[in-house]
Length: 177
Image: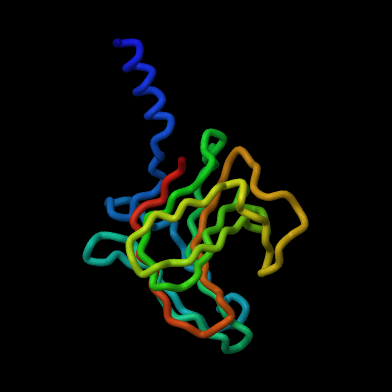
């Protein structure tokens, strides 16, 4: 019976999601950076703030003025191995709008691998298969394979729905499974 329990525990540990970033903890947020369309002359504005519940809230206003139209919060880190994972899990509460989750294999890559997700206005866990994340650069899908790398060096949340809109995305946890 002991061998069986050890095997079962090992399987459960392998299958359990691994916490990557927990906004509800007192983690260092200094590496999370805002990147709005202002880098191209746009007028969108956003910020990442901690709310009373301790969660991260990516919020702001997307503007179409001056050919703008997007807001993003991104996080770069030392190479992180993802070979044992097949999906990313995002525990969040949106505002009913569509967002993108992005990953970068290498920080120096010009393109990102993205996945769109709709929010419901309720707390939910968005499960994104890594192999479904497709390469994109400046809003254009690239003619290359979907994500299949062994490591990542960056993640981001992005909103750019081709319309002016206020937004708020409350983020609790980012996990890999």
